[in-house]
Image (cartoon, rainbow, N blue to C red):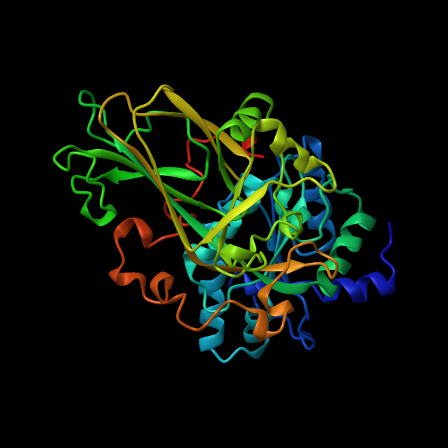
Length: 419
C-alpha cells in the first residue's frame, strides 16, 4: 500500500537513520532531526501470533535497524551497542547524533515480564540520559501499561494501529517510577553442591547471587553465621505480595494490580500517611483479610486496608505450622519453602532509584510533582540513606538493580515462557 505524504512526514519524527547503528556512509540529506526517535523492543513470543505480527509491522513503517526482537538479542546488549555508537558520534561532533541521544525514547511491547526486563536494563546501565519508556500491552498481565494509560488489552497489529500508538507516544508526558530492590536469603542445604543453585522455582525477576558466609550486615542473629546461605536478588515496580493472594495467583495465574486511587479513602490519619504516588520513594503496605478480599481489587471500588509506608521493609519467616507460603512479584508467583528448623528465610525490599516512563495524559498513576510542594512529604533528607548516586561503596548485592547482569533473563530460559 502506498504511503501518503502525511504519513511519511509523521513517521519521520520517529525514524532513526541506519548510520546511527553502524558505520554506513552518512546520508547527505539528513537535515531535520526527528523529534521523537524511538528504539522499539518487542517480544515476538507474546500474545501468540500478535507479537510476530507487531514486529513485522514496526519494521515496515520504521527503519528495521531500530526494531529489536528480545528473543533474538537481549536489550542490555542492544542498548550498550547503541549508546556506545552514539557516544562515538558525539565525540566526532555529530550534531544529528547528539540530538538523537538527547531525544531518544523506548517502546517495549510484551507482558509485564518483558516490560520489567527492559526497565531493569535501563536502570542497571546507568545511562547518562535514561530514555523514557512506553509500554505496549501485549500478552498477559499488562499492569504497567494499564497503570500509565496505555491500556490492558492486546493491541492491533496493523499499520493504522501502530501509527495510532506512535501518535500517543508523541503526545505522552514523562513520569518517574520507583525501583524496588528485593533480596532474599535462606540457608543452603547442609549437603549438596556449594554453587547457588536455586532450591525452588523462582520467577524470572529473581536470580541467584552467591553464597554468603557472614550475615552481620542484615543483623540476622537468628541464623548461624558459620553456615552458608543461598542469596537471590532482583527487582520490581508494581507489587510484591505473599499469602493467600499470591496462592490464588499461583493456582489460577490470575492478574491483579493495586492502583494508588484504590487507597485514597483508606488514609489512617493517626499514622500520618501521605497520599500514594509512584515516585515518592515509599512502599505502600496493604493488608487483605483473605484471598477473596484481595480479589475485590477487580471491582471498581475494591481496595485493601493501607497499613503503613516505608522506604525499606524486612520480613523474617521462622519455623511454624506451615512448611511453605506463596509469594508473587509483579504477577509472577512461586511457592516459597519455609524453615524446618531454627533457621529463617529473610526477604528485604528497599528503594533503589527511579526509571523514566512515558504516560498518557489521563493515566491512573500519580506523581509527587502533580501536587504543590506543601503537600509533599519530602524534606530533602529522607532519601539520603537510600541514594544510589555512588554505589561503589554499597554491598555487592545492592550495586546492581539487576537487569544488565543479574536481573537479566538467563540464556537457558525459553523466551516463549516469558509473558
